[in-house]
Length: 285
Image (tube, rainbow, N blue to C red; front, side, top):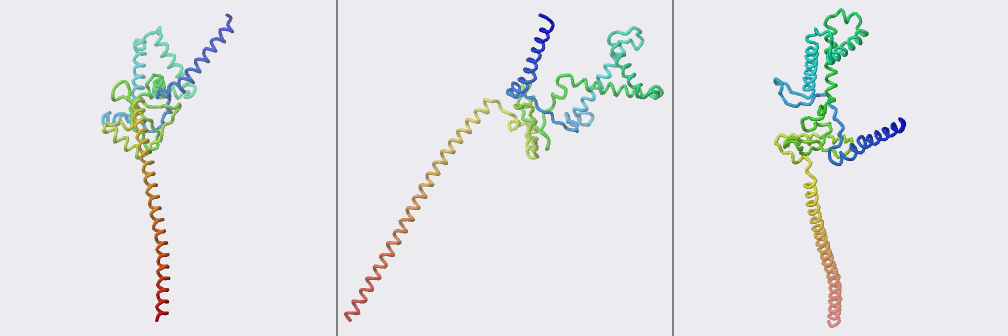
């Protein structure tokens, strides 16, 4: 097997893997299991994780991310200081070489922008380098599984989109978004539904907003179908009884009309007889 044949085989394998994991799995398998990809809801204000949880200040997800990024920068600085033995080690090790390469590369980049001012202003370089390392740490955090994907389930606010939830397998208080459509953007929340959702979540009654298992949904559908059939049967019976009653009333009215017509004929005959009697009396007189 030559290099070209190996390349074709590797390319074909990559194409198959791409079709399976970038097409079939996210657009068919995951939605059928209720764990499809949901489009993220973008909001400018941070999401409150714990109200008043940080010295009376609302602890938001952005604040948690900031603290974690700060911890990463501090840990990186401590590890670099330890690897360099307090910046006294002349022959750098691997981690010290990595740290020096990162800092020197950024310093060279900033020297081309700041020029002499970067060297004359003693606080400018530490400030810029700290901001750079902080932003780098914050972006690297997103590469870890769970960051910005595992959060606190709460009711969607008015104007934002939300998703139904299902009971998680970790504990009774864990919930997962139920997404059965690929790239689902959710349903826009209304003010009425937000108030109802908040009331149920505060009272720990999630039945109205949690998607029930398939067996329970099927049982409810069967029950509703039975009730529908019963109502349709009762409606058909009521319609038949109403139609029979209407026909009976129509027959009764027709009988009254016929009786009235017969009465008019009898009255005419009586008038004729009375006229004949009057004529006979006049002839006898």
